[in-house]
Amino acid sequence: MREGIARVLLGAGFEVVAEVGDAEELVRQVRELRPDVAVIDIRMPPRHADDGLEAARQIRGELPDTGILVLSQYVDEHYVMKLLEDGAEGVGYLLKDRVAESERFVESVRRVAEGGSALDPEVVSHMVGRRGDGPLSELTERERAVLGRMADGLSNRAIAEEFGVSERAVEHHVTSIFVKLGLTATGQEHRRVLAVLAYLQG
Image (cartoon, rainbow, N blue to C red; front, side):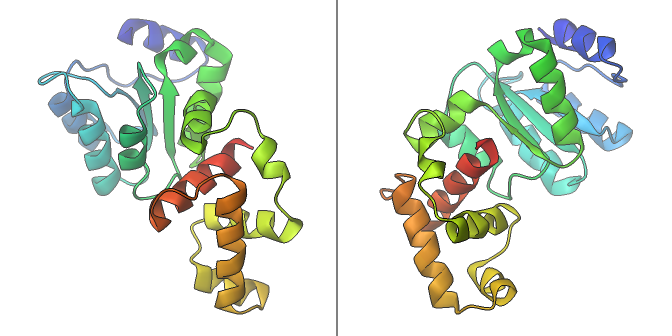
């Protein structure tokens, strides 16, 4: 799998600066080489559990300019939420099957390298709880604008200042966004990330 990914990236004009087989070596190499992007399997030695995810979070904490693209065999909401705890900028989460779709995979690597997000549509559909982009079409123009600023990392207060409205007005918009996207059953911060995921994919 690792060799195949390297071939795809080389063929697309990327420079592959290192290939590693375990999470500890991954962190060491990223610290030393400072790549634009690290492509990481969630399950890596030594424990073959979520070692890759923990390495990804460590890299994000130490080297926030390094993009992180995580590959997973399955849609796992817990893993996605842990990865996105510090925001969605410069982060990707794809199912491993997407690597075979080389153009899509390469575009995801590029997007993450540029500080954007690359989230597997199947992951987003699963987490938002609906298929397709229907829910976003239900948002008003102002709600979409608020959601866009949420995706940029702004707090409700910052959004209120930018739009020249009260913070309470923004809170009403945010609540309406959650309801329309079907995100009423989870905590506030959890729902905020899920709403942003839906927006980024829409």
